[in-house]
Length: 221
Image (cartoon, rainbow, N blue to C red; front, side, top):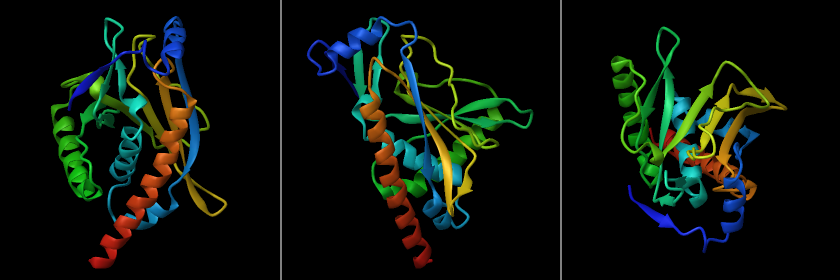
């Protein structure tokens, strides 16, 4: 992956950037119930977590502002794409980080799932909480599959931390639809509620497209 420097003095959000950079805690988060009914119906024994993660990462990468990061010198860079860093649980109840690569076309779904399974297995065997490669290029992901929640707070490293956090919980039936609480946390210096809204709109689209793709694959089997 590559990254480019963004001159915030010339960026449309330059004023907002300077304003929120003065705050000790510029982090903001929104939780939205997401309809996953069609995805669940199309999985046909495929793993839900990796399938949903695939849609989330495609939706997030479609928003350039979510790919922006702060460097130690306060410069802003924008990555051409970002990969997920997510937590899996060990038998003792502690977590380890897994890093998975994402490609562009929808047909790469199978490759993404296979790679995710492989990396999860390797990470669990290694058993250590390590961060590999360019951490700034990651989207941080966590899941609380035991709870359906309406709000959640993610830990962040203060005003200089800039990796968006994605989290979701347990899904449940509501009015005949399966709903999942989905949360996104951002450093407000780098993006606004508009960009968060674009992510959720993208996610609905990605879930619909993935569900249709998997349904077609099921029919061809």
